[in-house]
Amino acid sequence: MRSIVTASLLALSMTVAGLAQAEPVKIGVITTLSGGGAGLGVDTRDALVLAFKKAGNKDVELVIEDDAQKPELAVQIAEKMIQSDKVDLMTGIIWSNLAMAVVPNTVAQDVIYLSPNAGPSALAGANCHKNYFNVAYQNDNFHEAMGQYANQDYKKTFILAPNYPAGKDSLTGFKRYYKGELAGELYTQVGQTDYAAEIAQIRASGADSVFFFLPGGMGIAFMKQYAQSGVGLPVLGPSFSFSQDVLPAVGDAALGVKNSASWSKDLDNEANKEFVEAFQTEYGRLPSIYAAQSWDTANLILSALAKASVKDKDAFRAALKEADFKSVRGEFTFNTNQHPIQNIYVREVVKEGDVLTNKIIGTAFEKHGDAYVEQCKM
Image (cartoon, rainbow, N blue to C red; front, side, top):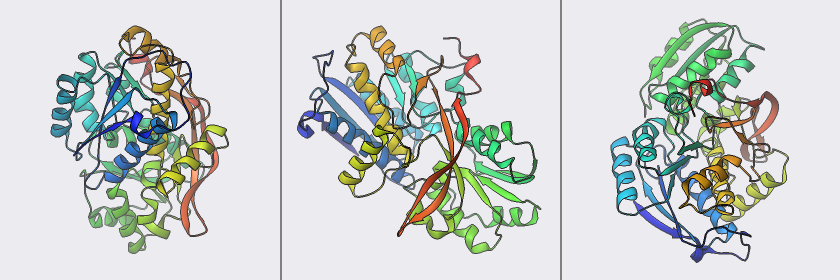
């Protein structure tokens, strides 16, 4: 699937003042728009399109393609965007295995890549690169927060995640801060939909709680089956498994679940209020964390374009690194490895009227970086 969105066709009356560049800017967006992970990519795409629409920037063109959650397809699309479409910047990838397939070769060709979601540890540490900016998090971060939170109430947690880079980072992050005993540790198949065997192991494990990272359709399937199983142990997870895009499908089984995130729709800052209202007005649904991160990615790009030409790579990278934009997360800065330093919150799934959503109940970390920054030689 391929689509081209030109901001001039969407322009509103609002403009970005003092834009430094006059030449057109072409941004390649590779994201997941079909299959079980489509909801994540749709929110990423929709927030990106809306942010440029609200800015009224007439010089930005988005070239959007569906990776179908397939690394080999993402690689092909990336090469075409670089060689044929001549994109200036790239963004959009949701999944860490796709990011690992695409990002190293992209940045080596002197194309700047801004991640709106995937944050594999390899790209934060030894393989960091001047052309790679992560605007979301490093994969371990949200899981570290839940490990920290679990220490308050639980002594024997069962943990599971899919067997791909983000899944491995997930459980590594949880274990980095969790001080209790592990009742079990499992890696499941990516795209798995039947969790009967895993739930049976949880039941027999003697666990007092369950922590899982299963984004998209995987998390929906697990939570439905877990609720039906009657195991009944408290569930913890990162926001990906309880984000706004999946809660309607999970249903009331998610009520009361604690999860971690750098963002929530109830964060009390003006940029976030404007974002949530704009997204809900435009699309008729509440935004997810994927949308929030993508919105920030777009506004980071806009802030850099206001200071430097994208053709002047050194100046443009310097402008990106300043992160001079109003983040929906509040305070946001880049660490030396060009990954965020930000607060990580604990949220609870609640029901507002008939709508399942999240509310913040605490702060796990303030101004939290990542564990790999010292391995980055930039």
